[in-house]
Amino acid sequence: MVTRDDVGWGEEEDQENKEAVDADFDSFCWANIVPQHKIFHASDWGKLERWIVERTGSRNKKLSVFTGPIYTKDDREYCGYRKPLGCGVKIPAGFWKVVFYIGDDNKLHSAAFIMMQDDYWKHEIREELRTLDKYRILENFNVLEKFQVPLKTISEVTGIIFKEQLYNTNPLYFWANTVTERKNIMTPEVYTIHQASDLLLERDLI
Image 1 (cartoon, rainbow, N blue to C red):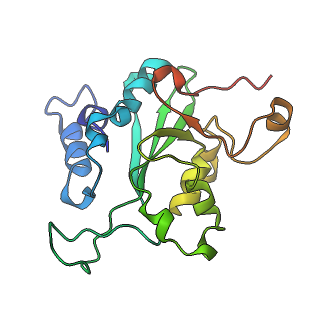
Image 2 (spheres, helix red, strand yellow; image 1 turned 90 degrees about the vertical axis):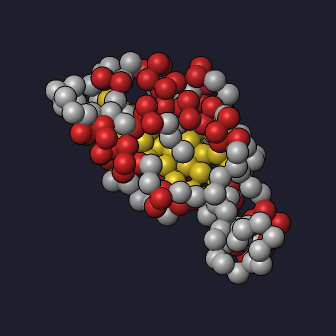
């Protein structure tokens, strides 16, 4: 879900590139494998990190990237070609990605993204689950389109809780506030990303 160039970096003083090699091994291993749509290899999902570096001038061009699958209660199962179901291997409904970086203002910033790959769950999920925040949020995402979202959205759809101060590093709003009311901004914010210029990485609150 990330490119090697974005996570396989280390200190310049490390002549043997040990830090970069360790990062590469930690990122690209069997434990991190999950079924994914072929378009993820052909789309700009892997370019998001590069676009952030180009747009922000992040310090030393270093990023910390966290990414993983989004599962629902009713995901499609895959047990091999023409093999019976029942193996318990589920195809994720989508994927999330969070990028942390130090901006040219020497402060920590973040950007969060979601890309869904399957809407099978929409047709199978029980009606009583549709009212849960997680599924009401996921209903907004079209399959195989990239979306920038607040960091809080990632927590809502995955259950992953970040340190409280990290939510303040993200420029998008999840909850309504005086700014969103004054500027007529719908929350939680969701923006479709087609190119680098679509990224919202800084925000003028005036």
